[in-house]
Image (cartoon, rainbow, N blue to C red; front, side):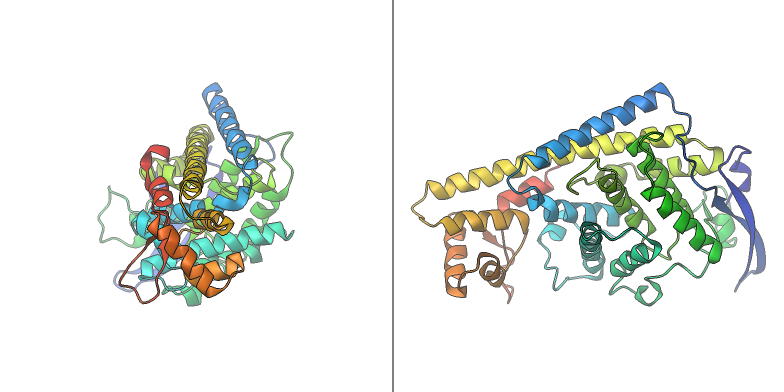
Length: 401
C-alpha cells in the first residue's frame, strides 16, 4: 500500500503491522484503521446535497410503487436473485443472470452458483431477523457471513471475524514480486480485539437515530464506507456491506419493503466504486464518495421501480391470457402469482403452495405450459422445473435496470 497517499486530513490512522513472507522473510508495513464515524454529516457540496435529495425522492417513489401492490413482498425473490448475481460479480464470482434466475436453490449446478444462491439465503435470514425484532449485532452479522460462505472452501473459517491480516487489490506502480502488503492498493485494519470493538461501534452507530443531524442516505453511505474499510471478515465483506445498505435504509424507515438492488449500478462502475472508497481513507473525500453513492442509490431505485412496474404488467397480461382462454380455474391465476414470485419451481412446490393435490397441480402446470404462460427450464432434467418466460425476460432486460 502506498503510504504517501494518506494526507493529514485522512479520517484514520496508519498503524504498524509485521509479518513473515515464506519467500522474502520478515516485513514491516502499516495498515489503515478508520476513526469512529462522527455524529454529524461531513461537509458536502451543493451538488452532493442535490444528489442525496434525488436519491431520497427515487427511493420514495420505489416505496410508493411497492406499497400499492396487492402483495408488496411478491417481488422480493426476483430482486434478491438479481442483487445476488451482481453483488457476487463485483467480488469475482460470476454466473450469467439468466442461469442465476432459473437455478435450483436446492441443487446448485456449480461452486459459483452455490456461492451466489448463498447470498439469497443470507439476505432472507437477515430480513427475517429484522422482522422478528432482532437488533443488528456483531453476532448477527457474523451469522450472515457464515451463511454466505456455506459450501465454499472458506466455510471452516467463516461465521466469525477474521484472525489474520488481509490486503485488497493490486497497485500498478510497484513490482508484483514484492510482499503483498506493499503491492496491495489497500491494507485494512489488523485482526484482533480492536477490530471487533470498531465493528461493534459501527453497528451501534447504525442503530442510533441520526435523523436530526444526518440524512439517511448519507448515513447509509458513511456506514458502508466504514464497514468496507474495516473489512472484518476473511471473505464476503463487499457482499455483506452492500446488503447492509438495504438493511440500514429499512431500519431508518426510508424503505418499507427490501426491493432495492444497488449492486448492478456499482458493478458497472467497479473501478470508480473502489476509487471513491479509497478517496475517503486517503484524503477524507467524503463529498465525492457520498455523491457517487447517492447517484447509485437513485439509479438503482429508478431501475428497480421500472422493473417492478414491468413485472406487474407481465403479471396482468398473463392473467388476461388465462381469462381469454378456455381454461376455467381460479387456481390458474394463483399459479401465475406464484410463478412471478418464485422464478423456478416444481410441481411439488405448486402442490404445497396452492394446497391442492399433486395430480391437480401437475394438470394445472401442464395447462399453463400449453398456453405459453409457463415453460420447462430443462426438458432433459430428471426433476422438471418450470418458469414464466415473460417474467424472466423482464428480469434479464437491461432497459429497465
